[in-house]
Image 1: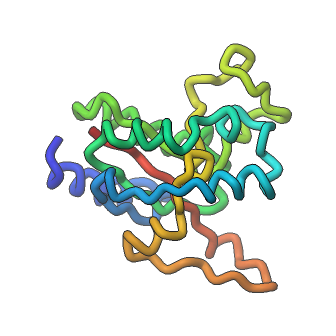
Image 2 (image 1 turned 90 degrees about the horizontal axis):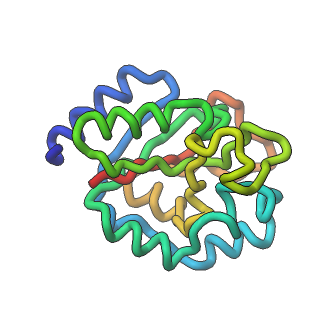
Length: 177
């Protein structure tokens, strides 16, 4: 699958999927990673040590950088913020579609942790749906703020008044070979 085919496919997905608001394709080596991002997970996120797709269960920044180096492209996805996570099917559906189109190593990375089970079983052996688990972007050290600027999107401003649910969106990603 060449870059033009991927871009065309992404445009078609945005048109066809109501949960997908926009998609941008960037070279995988331009995905920004930083160790401080995982520190924010460790000190401040309630999912730390409680979810299979979050630290310390997820790969660390160095391991993820090695994996990232094996990919050519990253499709950065703007998804509806009310989406419940990778278990909702959109990311897995897109990952499978890419595999069928010849990008067999396609890998979805989620905007948030799975959320399918409460509490999370925290091991692949105990998880009732291990095929649906995908790492959360921050858990891998992906600096989503820098990524959002890199693809040309505007951040949702921080205010004391919560935004309306329809105004919230999250960033997910597909790694494509």
